[in-house]
Structures are given as C-alpha cells and as structure tokens.
Length: 149
Length: 149
DNA sequence: CCGGATCCAGTGCGATACTG
DNA sequence: CAGTATCGCACTGGATCCGG
Image 1 (cartoon, rainbow over the protein chains, first blue to last red):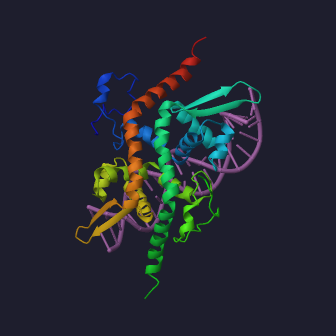
Image 2: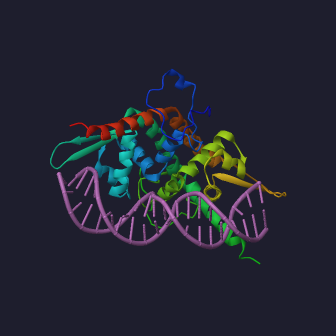
Image 3: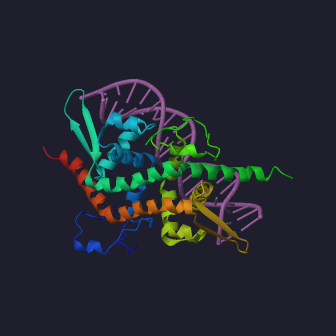
C-alpha cells in the first residue's frame, strides 16, 4: 500500500485513468494526496451522519433528513449534502411539484462507503457506554489525584 | 434500534449501568444523546487518521505518529491523542528515559473502532478516483452549462 | 523528545431573513 | 418545502515560546 501517485498538489485526475491505476494507490496519510482531500471532506460529523442515515433509513427528502439527523442546521445539511452529491455518493432528485419535493438517496458508490460508516455508528451505539466510563475514570483520576495529601 | 436512553442533556452515565443497559440503545442520530457527543468527538479528520494509522502500523511514538499522519500539527496531534486516550481507545505509555519516549498504541476497545475506521481509509484509497471523477463531472456540468447560448 | 501554554488569524457554523 | 444570502460570534488550528 501507499504506492504513491503523481503527487501533484492540484487536482490532476481527469477521470479516465486506464488500467494501470490498479497498481497505483492513493495514500490517505499523505498530506498532499488527492485522496486525503476526499477523506478530509468526508471526515466530519454531519457528512458521516447523513451517509449513515441514508443507509439505514433509505431515501429521504430534505426535511426528513433534517429531522433524522437531529441537530443539523439547514445550512449545514444543504452544504454537506451538496458535497456528497458532488462527490457522486448521493443522488438529488427534484420532483417538479408545488410545493417542491427533493429526495436524496445513495448512489451505488456512496452505498459502499455509507455501509462502512454505518458500522462506526453501530460501534458507537454499542460501545459508547464503555467510552463514557473510560472518560469518567480518566477525569476522576486527574482531578482526584491531587486532592489527597 | 434507537430505543432511546434517559435522554438527559448532561452526562448521566456513572459508568456502572447494570444489566438492563442491554435493552437500551444509544442513538447517534439524536442530538442530545451521549453517544452523539462521543461520535462527534471522533468524527474529525485527525482522530480518524490517527486511529487508522495506529491500526495499520501498530504502536508508534509521538514523532512517528506525527510523521505517519502527515500534515498534523503537534498541537492537534497532542489534543486528538489525548482525547482518544481519555476515551479509553488508546494507551499512552511513558518510558522514563532521557530523552523521554512516549509510545501510543490501541487498547482492545479502540482496536474494534480503528478496524472499522481503517476500512473507510481503504475505501477512500480505492474509490477516491471515482469520487474525483464525479466531482470533475459535477463542476464541469455547472460551469459548462451556462456558457452556451 | 514530548507536550503544555499562549497568541492570533481564519473560518466553521448557527441564527435570521428572503426567494422560487 | 427547499434553498440562498448575510451577519457575527466562537471556536479551530497553526506558529511560537517554554518547561520537564
């Protein structure tokens, strides 16, 4: 892994990469690798939750999504969903009615990612208590340590 | 799923939750669920990359980690790794030497998560080109659409 | 070598109001 | 209903200095 790509700073991938792309690999850990940018774009609270929600619930309209991913503002929802659409992960379908109805769902590409993201959500829901417990122990050890003596 | 917990705003989990905790579930999608806080804390670029790096490479010292996760500042690395330690995901071992040597590695709890996170890194490295291609197409369609006529 | 503390610019993000 | 535009604050996160 980490075979390294062209390693240019700018976006140099025209979309067609031929077969040799198979022996090349993006490196998420490299600061200037294009894949890092992709990763960084996805690695935020709202994007991950939106992906997970679309994966769990299925297609949803804008307001449903906003209720589903509780706490997200319209601005952030719009922005995140736009990015996901731009990245070819999510499809945005506008039904030309009045009032307008816009539906979002996962594209095949996005489903593969969302699937993995959802497992992280699952993990947190299953192991959250352990994390919180550890956190309490940690804080307690820090504040409790210096009171004595 | 989404069975809902006590739903208090504050941190109300003392660490011991008895057996009934099994029928309860955290809900990552609920704005005020404690698990959401945990999720939000982990859902950032650096934390995810650090977990993935520790999973792939194994235990590393501070400076190794900084080189491994290229682009991270010392401040962010310290901060992220502290949070991960606090959450019981990562172990920080100080070797009392001079110069000091500090080693980080995954705790069992953290390994379970890191494993899943790593699959996301893999996904990005494998499908990054598709994302970038989609992105180009999207941008092109937007700017190319209004030039004509 | 590890990392805490401080300073400060940049911006993420929420609140609000307006459009189609 | 879905989305854009503007404003403003708070927080992020990098650079730097310092201490163990």
